[in-house]
Image (cartoon, helix red, strand yellow):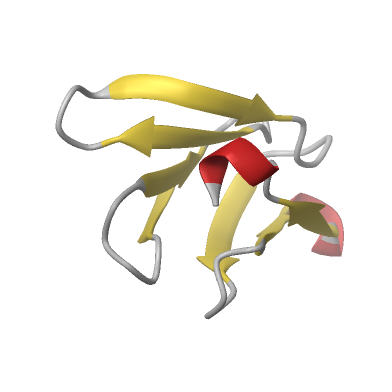
Length: 73
């Protein structure tokens, strides 16, 4: 439902109906990491400029800040 690029353009971050966030290698389209995001449908997300956190928001005003795993930074 929502897609954002990492600041360096090396990865995509995707969130969907299940509220989870996936970090994807755009060259292989392989999911590198799956993070538990929010309980509701994710409508929007953003990656912080330093690439260390992902903000995801969804139904009912639910918002979560997720730390990005070191291996994905």
